[in-house]
Image (cartoon, rainbow, N blue to C red; front, side):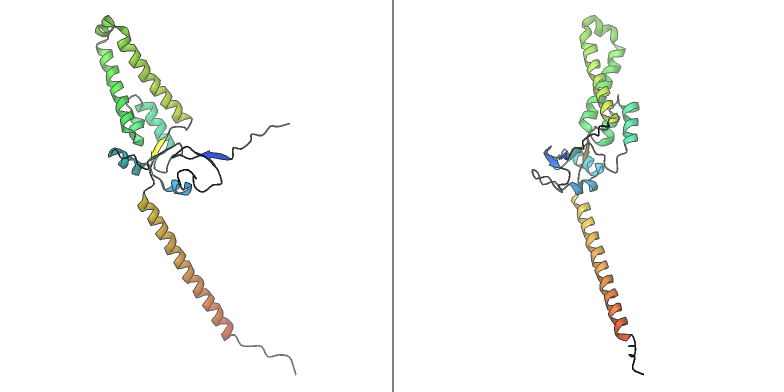
Length: 197
């Protein structure tokens, strides 16, 4: 007898964390429309976060189209000690802390003898915390649970809505023309004379 894993019918809203059914179109708590998350970009979120504007910026595990997982993984492996993976996705403050941790690591290595003579915990405890932060972020990236800031730019939503409206109008006109052509072809068809000979 094979056991099948039961599929979870719920999902979490990326904005408020509310538990929603997968079939719901929007979150009942914060009114986030889930289909708009497909239009969200990390580039727009970076602009908002660079100006310290966190309004409507969502941290999501689902990567947007402008962030590739393999690039994020490479940044984490090779530039993770500098905070490169945080700078890549726009988490500038965490990236700054990782960069400062790297500077502390370099300074601690250069002045190792003087710091150890004063107190060994001054050197080793911050370095251990720094290394642990890198390992944890690496594990999050590998398991695809690393949260990336995304933002739904309203101009993009409006452009998509206008495009959809234009497509709808164009298709309506084509259908109306096709109906007119069918009516004209029916009226211009010669009637077959019926059968009395």
